[in-house]
Image (cartoon, rainbow, N blue to C red; front, side, top):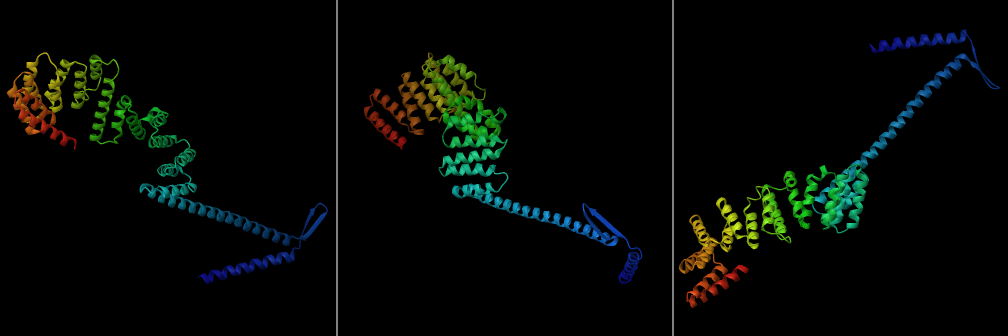
Length: 401
C-alpha cells in the first residue's frame, strides 16, 4: 500500500515538474530591478526560484536562532540548578554541624551555602550563632548585618537573633531594648517572651516578670510544673523586694498582699513569707490569724514553727491551738519543738522536756538539743544538760556536712 502511494506521488511530481518546465520554455519572461543607477535583469522564473530559496533560508535561520536561545537558556538553567544543589548541600552540612556543636565547620558551610542561595537569611543567622560560640563576637555581629540585608521586611527574626546574642553576651538591658523595639503584638511571640523571661530574671525585674507570667504560660514553652515553680519564685522575690522597701510597714504590706491574685494568696510558701514579714514588723496578731487560717487548709511545719515564735497577748490560747494541731500531726518534729518552747514559757518543765525528747527522736536537730539542754540545766540536771549540748554540737556538725 505504501509502495502504491509513493508511486502515485512520484508520478504527480513528474507531471507537475514537466508542466512547469513546459511553461518556462513556452512563456519566456524577464524581471527588471532598478536600484538607483544600477539595473539588474533576470528571468522571471530565476527570480521566483531565488525568492523561494531566500524565504527557505530565512525560515531556517529563524529556527536556528530560537534553537540557539533555547540552548543558552538550558545551559543557564543547568548552571543555576547546579548552584542551587551546591547551596542546598552545603547548607544541609552546615545544619548538621550546627546541631552537633561543630561550630567551626557549621559557620564555614553555612556561609558557603549562603553565597549560592537566593534566601541566605537562615544561613547567616545560624552562622552568626556559630561565630559567637567560637568566641568571635565581631564576626557574629557582622554576620547578623549580612542577615539583616537578606531579611528584607522580615526584621522580627533579626531582632530576636540580636536579642538572643545580647542575652548570651550577658548584656541584659540591651536584650530588653531589642524586644521592646518590636510592635506590641510581636512582643507576645513565644520567642520574644522567652528572651524577656531570661533577661528579667537576671536583672531581678520581678514586677515586670510577674506581669509577663500570663504570656509565658500561653507560650507553652514550660511544663505546668516548671511554670508553677517560676510563678512561685517570681512572687517570692517580688514580695521580698516590696517588703524591704524603706518605709514599708504592715499596713502597706497587707495592701500589697491583698492586691495579689487569689491563687497566689493560697500558696503556702508565699503565706509563710507574708507571715514572717508581719512578725518582723511586730504585727504578730495579724500573723497569727494568717497562719491559723492557712493551716486549716494545708499543713506546713514551717508555718507551725513560725507560730511558736509569735509574741501574742493570749499565750494560753496560743499553746492550746498548737496542742490541737498535735492531734492531727503527732509525728511532726517541728510542731513538737514548738510545743516544747510554749510549755517552757508556761513553766511546764515536764511537758516541755517530753515534747523536746519526742521531737529529737523523730528528727535530731541542734536547736532542739540546745533547748533541751537549757531546760535540763534549769532543772538542775547538769550532767544530762552537758550531754545534750554535746549531742547538739554533733548534730550541728552533721547538718553542715
